[in-house]
Length: 339
Length: 291
Image (tube, rainbow over all chains, first blue to last red; front, top):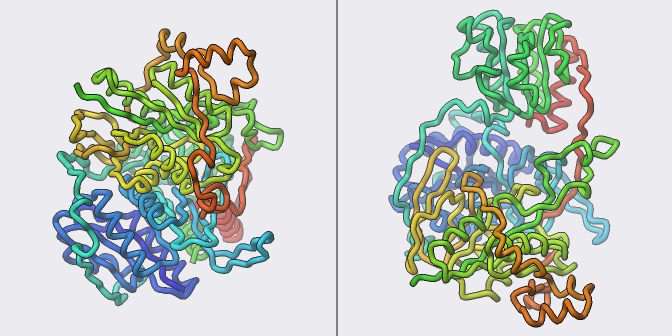
């Protein structure tokens, strides 16, 4: 079977988080299928980029470097990736569901006449039986995504066409270094062989990209703390849990007032309003002002010593216990069951 | 005087944004049939961009193109009421089950039939699938450049067009030659309301299939006023290769669909024990809340 490849985006000299998350997922899928993990990077001034990428367990890195390839433009990047895929015929190809990834991936899928599933929330390996054709497909990529405005969850497969292509949003998968000494091979692509002059007809005249900010609002998973967390020290557990789940950390007004967490992370009537897929409320009693900012979350888990805390009225799960004891267990069992 | 031939790609979609009580089945799943069918919101914004170009260059023409069942003619009428000039409906049972690749194949054939054209506009994505794939795939099949996430068309001449794009963390201004395909972002301005004059003019616009239900007088009216005809195109009209259409032509297959069930909340009480925590994390992983 052929390999898994991830199209990596570069953000000011650093590999984007979403790409590292995909490499992490790609590595575990590659292990399951017993194939190599590959990455492709296209841009300019890519010194040391291999040192950022190989630790994620990448066996081959394809690098196309030229000043004209940065910033991202659809046609030259599509031309390079399309031709590369025709040469190396990957089994699976993953892209970040970013502005660029969602612009690029469909163009490539169309050129290669292969299937593409957008915004997957989970990727798994599984088999499929086509009863009509009496055929069994082994080791397919299950591309799992919400559809119909989030009212259904669909599992999509591409039985016949290759690569099996999917995009995934930032923060959906976790990122984890495989080994800091992982040895991969750097393969330089000569851009001249992949692009033509015609690929540069669209010109960028002006560009304003803001620095990355804390983005609680768009996070699918939020771990939030209240006064009951008790200390800045305990808040570190919230950051740790958020990091492994691929989420952000928020806080109630009481936690902000107590100085446990900065104001920019405040959730509630006087902070930001969020509606993540999962909201974990730690040591939050659930005052109306806080609930107004989070009660639209799809799933609410509360961790509180007090069984009578009002937050439990809107929670799906109420864990009665101490934050400092419960969170390390959540981290432990999450890691154990996703390995 | 500059004039542009503009094609707007539009889709009729179930309104998934406001799933009210009426659209819920007893088991808590969505009754899709109960959702109203609407003009996909970002496609309407694409139409507005086309209308603005026409405001500036009145000799330009706007052609609406949609693919779907017969009732999708409704959104063509809606577009005509707002200022489009003509509309085409790609409709055939053989298109059923098309994924984005098969859909873009059919649309690209229809666009080729409408050639020459200068600008193709469509919404970034449709609210029933949110894939944002059909626009770029149509552009690839037509071998023309794409400019995605457009918020504003700043300038256009016969030779080039300047577009402001909305990216996740900023904006970009790009220049492209014509012809090209533009996908319009949700941050672009809303579409104008129906125009009374257009409403009167196109009130009786219908497809041939719709017309056949009517009286002879009505059919005569259509013969006198050809602009009232909404053209239907089938697989044969597009001379499409059937292996690229419908379920056969769709590389992606839906293996399983799982309805998200909305139920009244009652907290499940857990202790902080190791067993409870492991059980909880396993459950969250298996139902894809965390991955």
